[in-house]
Image (cartoon, rainbow, N blue to C red; front, top):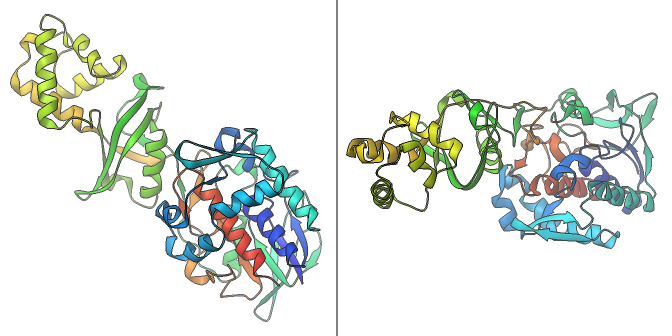
Length: 404
């Protein structure tokens, strides 16, 4: 069969490889001047290509689409991705959190390995080849229109999402999907920073480790995790915030409240005892200096301002009521989220081709025969840690491998 794959990123390259391995005649069309432009910038240029965990644990890190992806992840789990790269000459290493990277720390080696595997299976690759539309006849895809009309028995759309548009992710796949009668769910940035109403300019660049970030909606806790948080000129970012953004990406941020627990290891009673001890031992010092035993220096002024305790107030003058306010702010420092940062900064796009309109075993469209979707273009996303690239590899492999 003749197969056209649109998009030379992670899912497209894997789909092309899998389809060609089945003996199909595969043509991969990439509109950029080189393959895998988004792969080059993942993992800060190192490419966290998967997470070395079993399928059941992997699925726990999928934010949307876990049920749809279950069969796919079990058929092509992280172990298979690792085996694929190692068998094609790329040495891997596993780091903290089971994150898998190329041993070279060069994302370009991931792209080169995928390209080499494709070429070894006979895939024809055309660069600077932008597809304008799909061609259908009698409920079946029969080709694409690029600079010329190209005929095929099957077309795999692997065009990515809307994030990092400079890499070519400009939403082409969503347009193709709608043209084929598919529903495309709301598209929002995910794994990105969060803008807050409070002025955090004086805290820019401050990183807090071992804090708990919690989010509530309608009084219900929707997120609470221990980890690292980074203050920026617009609000907050860092690993905790990226994970939170995945959970809240389709919510109205005005309905969400955020709090930071600076001392998660201490309950209210133990924290009060700690405060009493610090205030007693440093009774003749100003509060702005006493607080440095509890928080980074730049955080002290901000926290004290939230409590109404003057920075210059001596420790021995702090009242019981003021100490209670201070303990409360240390356990639940409030932030008011305004919005997520945009697609140009987000790691992935949340939303995409409606999963109920795809066959979960093959990624084939239920609307048009011979049409397949894989990777970021479908409505499935996960937390950071290599999970989203694994979704790309798994769905790409299943799409290509199902064409025989």
